[in-house]
Amino acid sequence: MALITKAIKGTKDVLPKDIHKNQYVEAVMSDVAQRFGYREIRTPTFEYTQLFQRGVGDTTDVVQKEMYTFDDKGGRSITLRPEVTAGAVRSYLENGLCNEALPQKVCYLGPCFRYEKPQAGRLREFHQFGAECFGTSSPLADAELIAFAKQIFDELGVSGLSLEINSIGCPTCRAEYHKALKEYFSSKSDELCDTCRDRLDRNPMRILDCKSPVCSEIASGAPVVTDYLCDECREHFEKVREYLSIMNIEYTVNPKIVRGLDYYTKTVFEFISNEIGAQGTVCGGGRYDGLVKELGGQDTPALGFGMGIERLMLLMEAQNAEFPPAPVPDLFVVAMGDKATAKAIDIVKDMRAEGFSAIMDTNQRSLRAQLKYADKLGAKYSVIIGDNEVDNGVTQLKNMETGEQQEIELNMFVSGFYNITLSDQLEDIEINGEELDFASLFGLNKNEQQGEE
Ligand code: ATP
Ligand code: MG
Image (cartoon, rainbow, N blue to C red; front, side, top):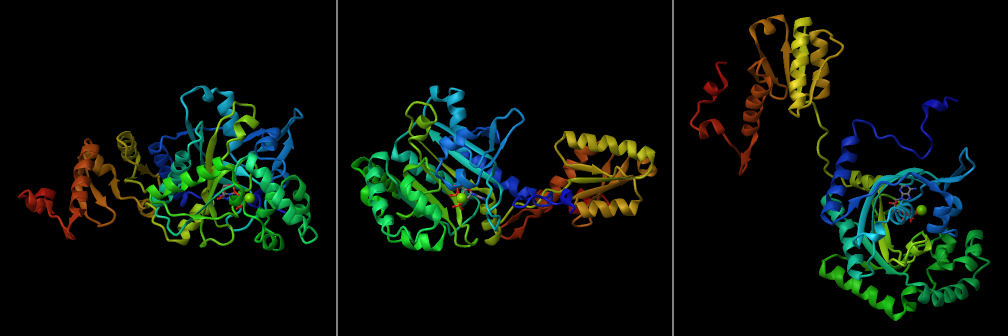
């Protein structure tokens, strides 16, 4: 088997022809993050296994079944991160961010690894954009975090996502709830799957998250957590809802949402799509007031979300979302012969220094082949330089879209390029659907302006 020419199951290449789409999505995310006061944090893609066992929770599917865990050559147990929050908290504590002005707001974008059954929207290496906010218990922070995620969807033009929220309380009120859940599920324990029977004692709330049809059918009749909230958690949840309303953010309360990770308290939320199949949760998050302490820090209320880039992009494709066009070269320089090549080297150098994308054929092929290549690359402009052009100091700059040619001086290439391309752009400007004729606007004769043709 030719394993070396096959990517690992559940991993994905993003090819050069598509990369601008990812870059666009990432740019929107980091721009929105900046406007919400979040700064990027980059943490390693692997950490000690204990961090995730402690942080994500020993009873979760993620830790029990989905982690890429191995011993390194020094015999340490290492895990490829299945999520970023645990590492972000580790870094927050280790680097003393906890001593800086609170709340500390950080965001990240990077790969995560989970050994899951690959399918549409479910990969073994996937990418998450996420945000964490440390040091605030205010319900306004919960609402703002949700607004942050929503702003990203809005700016990417993604529509039709439903926001579902819930409160899963604090350890105090959850004790009561766990008791009620245990009682309910115990009476049906023979029907539960093996994993859930195991969960019954250790973490009955996990049963609500089970994907098996029988378990989820049974779970649909289970007591709901919102009936068990203590006063503080209930008031907190009411405030979150109030702030969401002030922000004009639509949501539904879904008492079945518990999230797959152990660290959540109080608010949890998901943005769900019904357009990308079974893996519809594009973003999930919530409050995790106990995690920082659990990982050795001071008692620190905190919250965050994680957004799956691949799922988001599946949804964007499904909705025929608009992406900016793939970037193309501004200029292709066809050079024929040694003298011309030397001149072309100068020109592309100057153009690149000026910020343009300028390409020449390093293969020094025939004129035809070079023009064909320029066309394939989608270059906006091209010039042909041969011995004659070098001797005369001029050539024709060709607009590859319109075919129009204009004279350009080789020794003043960059300024000539500006002149010609700017006037081309101005001609493209339309006002009220009518093309603006800049030449007549400034009392110029267009032909004169462009030189004799
Ligand atoms: P699911 O219920 O789909 O398994 P989850 O609850 O495990 O999701 P989180 O741990 O909250 O997901 O991760 C946040 C987001 O990361 C998800 O909403 C999803 O968009 C994305 N995500 C999680 N696991 C995968 C995966 N295996 N492949 C692609 N994206 C994923
Ligand atoms: Mg999962």
